[in-house]
Image (tube, rainbow, N blue to C red):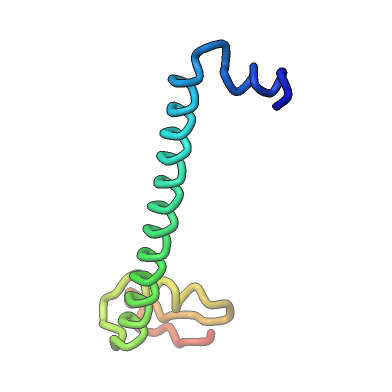
Length: 90
C-alpha cells in the first residue's frame, strides 16, 4: 500500500477513534434520510385519503372556506343578503 495512503488511513494514530465516529455519523444521517422519506410517504398517503374523503362529502351550508372558493371564481357574483332588491348577474 502506498505510504501516503497508509498514513492518511491511520490518521496520525487516531484512526481507532476517527473512523468509528465517521461510521456512526454516516449511519445517523442515513437513518434520518430514511425516516424523512418514510414520513413524506405517509403524509402523501394521508393527504390523498383526506382529499378523496372531502371529494365524496356533499358541500355543507355555511362552509365559509368552500363559499369563498365558489365566490372567488371569475365572473361569478353572489347576491348580497343585505339588499333583497339585488339580482344576480347585475
